[in-house]
Length: 149
Ligand SMILES: [Zn+2]
Image (tube, rainbow, N blue to C red):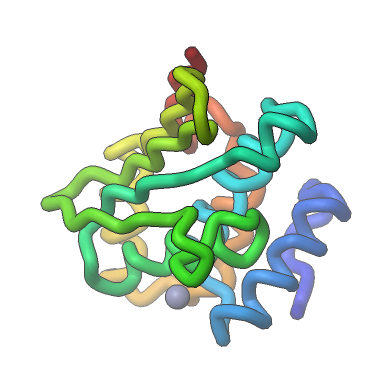
């Protein structure tokens, strides 16, 4: 994978490589999923993380649905182990995390402006990898909103 931004942490680069290998290509929506998974792992302790389950509300079309593989590649929430459920949405991309046998929830919503900006750049023909690095480098508070309860 060609590294296109020196400010991205080695940690994140390793996760992006893992996800791109799983998914087949590197793109901005895949990296959004990676960053959601990474953030949640940072917030939760090991015991909490072991009970993590996710419902992903997302338009079931590429490139949006690439987010799902970013999450599956770097967390243990997958369709196969039944810890990841998918719901179709019109525009919204939100991941509703919960812990098994607990009231604790953690919701991560991707900012609509970020999604719109990305779609505009994609329609202008911006290369996928370039946009992926742009997302990798974006401050977390610009990328998504987190509700932690
Ligand atoms: Zn993709």
